[in-house]
Length: 271
Image 1: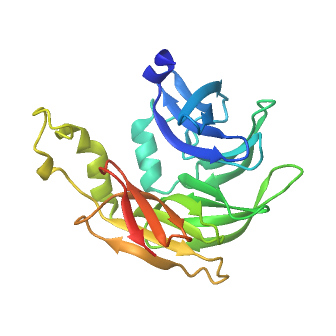
Image 2: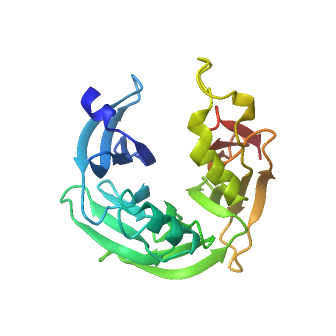
């Protein structure tokens, strides 16, 4: 395990409660892969089970289980980025439709393109048993696809434009789609590129933490409205919490939780 962790750079992850498995997108130095862990809740430990790599899973970002042994995985670009950084950056800002969604069978390692032509495909989640939502960060929008149960192909049914660069998607217990993202991209990009220069650990190495760049937040929801109307939940600058990337909500307790890019801790808000 220690050897694997040295080559472990996680990005997206998803938990399957039925199988107690955690699927993780890993951008390792050796190349991208999907890592499967078995969670033991009694001792709060996840044991590594398997590694899956496939040529179609070349720029994985987010993933979601659609059964006990099947995943849908987004690729945000058409080609692996590490050797095409300038090209990838240009295509990101030009909203080039190079992203895709890949279907993966964990039992057979079968993989296929379920949908493509998506500019910077990012977050993905099931809306219900027959529909899935996929975020397109640079459009910016999310799209709803119908899942073909036999072929696992995705058919576009609706596209909803939003006013911020959308990141991850989640669905609460009422079936409402939750989304978080970035209202001002240059600020988020500056955080991404310079955050490592600051003294986050208090060791005295690096720049003073109070001078680090910050970025705003935008959290919203969509209840399936046919006209594509979304409702803002939490929008603002950097005073409390910035660079929002994902949101979840506990309707029973009336609480929501937001995580941010390189933010310390988790922001909790009342709904």
